Image 1 (cartoon, rainbow, N blue to C red):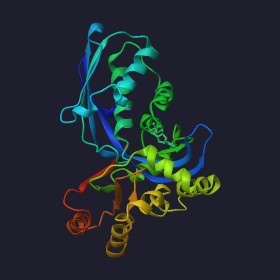
Image 2 (image 1 turned 90 degrees about the vertical axis):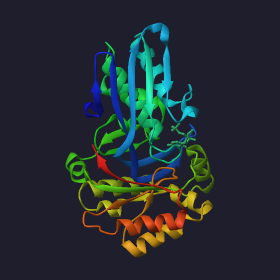
Image 3 (image 1 turned 90 degrees about the horizontal axis):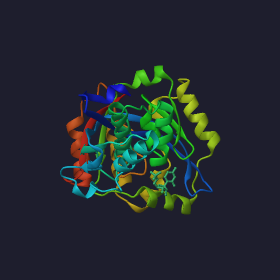
Length: 304
Ligand code: C5P
């Protein structure tokens, strides 16, 4: 995770906060605690936010600024929660000015808020006299959000439980996907994760745990290609209400033989772009034509 630190001095540090996509997301149950049981494979992307933390006197407290997104500058922000938990756990007492350079769209299923929180923990760990161990960092992350622990590991990650039980995917598989081009696209609407999961629990259209685990293990053994692994159980829930997804997905499949998928609980989607692909202008034109000029598109790649 050290590679996420972009620059530092003794009292200031800048940390990259990658976005993520779910290459695989199976929802397997509704749990007694209200969360859903998952099996998921997550990949981090080069497109992301930047967190800058500056050490201040204790009397300054924790201050969060997010230029251009003033609505995010409040104690509900996961960055704020991460910082509060870190100070509680370490017992350190100094002030922190936190600047969040926001790029990852919110309510998109790209893990922006979760990644910002974990990068805040990495930044505080760097500046503090006390370091939270990698294991503690994952434990702390799980208290912030279900997606957070996956950002506490390098490389591709397999998540279970409600998303908080994480392990790294086989390193050679991670290595083979480094630099894989990914086209992200998002309609001009965002979805609440809680709402999407609520609808999922009404439909009860769950995958079995045995199928999900077998699928991921087959992929890790090299018996299943990454394209064949791609899956998201939440698509059914979202697509039955938002009728514009299926026609565009169908067109992308038909015209380009690519496999579009929604990431997490949406609304963002992605397509893995093969090295030899030469039709990018036409693919973008198709997406903008279907979802309008205000549809957000970004070409990025899988990183460690
Ligand atoms: O954990 P996090 O706060 O990110 O989750 C947001 C909401 O999404 C939860 O309150 C819950 O309603 C839903 N959720 C779920 N099962 C999961 C993860 C999230 O039902 N595994």
